[in-house]
Image (cartoon, rainbow, N blue to C red):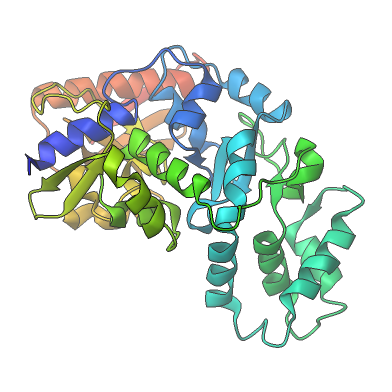
Length: 360
């Protein structure tokens, strides 16, 4: 079985994630290709798309959200993701059990004695008027019936039980707004797709979609990305259509036959990634893109810089400056290219106004 080196996996990941060469794709197609963008920090998807697309215009993403073709909703790993409306409807039912279990993992004691079917019915009745509410507001309303549980636990569980979306203006470019929710069905005018008993079409599609954006990858990587434990059957059903490899530690990797696997020596440009970018979080073994010593950055909300395809710095903004903090010593050429790309990012963030980049 062919062994793919860490560098080979790195270049494949960059290619699938549109980080090796910026793409000329419509924003909607890009969100679909990436299987969504993690978006609990509302402005971060704009940076992720800027790093992946040529001539990205934030207004294009704003338009997709206000026209209801892209939505913000809880899906993979019980985190807020920006996904296409079609994917939200197709994927939500598969995530139901995981969402419930993850809430119970945090609030089991508070929710002891609460009948979840009754809670879901009560929440739907409250939300039936289609008036946007915050999760705390919804929790406080429901706590009149379940006072021992408390508003926070009830609100969190309702998000797991009832498919909802967070409405604009939250998530729009340079807008600050609270997370007001309504049911998915009322916002999109369509009910979520139900899983057919005895069939697994959604699971098989999810495997292929994941490999398109993240492959080659192990089954454990797929689980880490979506948080779902019930996909072995889908992987088994899809396996005969896939290629198999090994990584340098001997793990089996799966991939689509016609997916890009660039030459490991392909040059990789500097890229600035937003907080919680799935190019890093989409794997159980993140060694293809980030050193083990820095793995914690990927879950701490640090924005990172890729140099030669790997996490080599963190970045932030201070006043009118994009500030880069290297994690290792840069060569003179690396400092120059990081500063140049940082200046482009600074211009994007300031809409062309005067900003600068500082590489510490």
